[in-house]
Image (cartoon, rainbow, N blue to C red):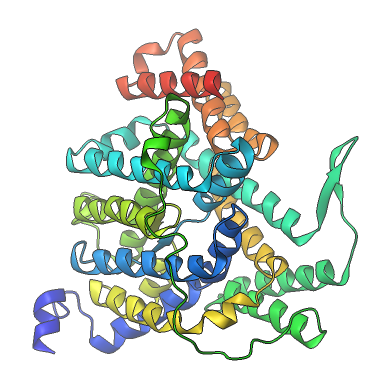
Length: 431
């Protein structure tokens, strides 16, 4: 006990081992849906689904332990939502890039991320982007993954005249829609693990109705990660054409991490009087390093999960809570057979629910000012319409720079925005 108090400063943070355990368990339950969703999304890129189950958890374990011992904060990490969709649907399926090369792109973005973080310029770049665009990127990703969720569910389908249309109400679609309504209600009631419960409800209903077969066993040794481990093609990713995707991975992870850290730190009462977050650089370093490690293990960009806020609300205040979350993740490795029976339409409502959360801050964008309204709107709408997070970011940032210059406000643009604008133009030309 004294050792834990010394390492994590439990007394100083007015917490106990039991509080940290409850907080760590709560965080795991609220983010556990990623165990099912991430392999389902990345497997559509041609990657081995069983190996992805282990890779998802291993990347989460490494990142969460780094957050615990390096960042000393109650944060959990795992492959990020939106980033996995970008990996599969935009880069691999959309641009016909081999998944091995896509992992190389993730690796390079992570290395650049590490360099920017250690040089102390990561936060400066983030501050150069106007709030409206930061929020719009998150909202656009939310709309994008909601579109993917509806497509995976079968609620919407392709149409030769209108591109998309309402799908047929098959039993699977009806079960998924009921599951989504249940998930939304549980989230409204703030039930811990509401999204996970929704996935389990749909899967159990499918088993009962005979659409899914039970596995021969529930517990087994973790699936080998050999099919995806060290399969990244770094040399193949070192192409001029991939500047845009590398930038997009970096940008999304940058703001996702910063916004999560700030929001969770505020909730935990860990911010200083001047509003700064203690050990911010250490946490950002852990986040950047985990992206590199995750790409080697065999998964898309790993980032800090906003679900850490649920653990903080339950009492977590130190990195000890993250240690408990990581330990539970280790235990989850031995339940791969359960993950293998979860159908795609069971994870679709999870995508839609996460999309709702990501879109919810759109009210902060000032749509009465065309200099911010138009770029924000283009960022949001172009992601689902082009099926590309990268193109949404490109159109939004480039239009913002152009409109600011035309409006005589070029001097208000930080140097970093000119660089970002140039990268966006390059991505648009190459894309």
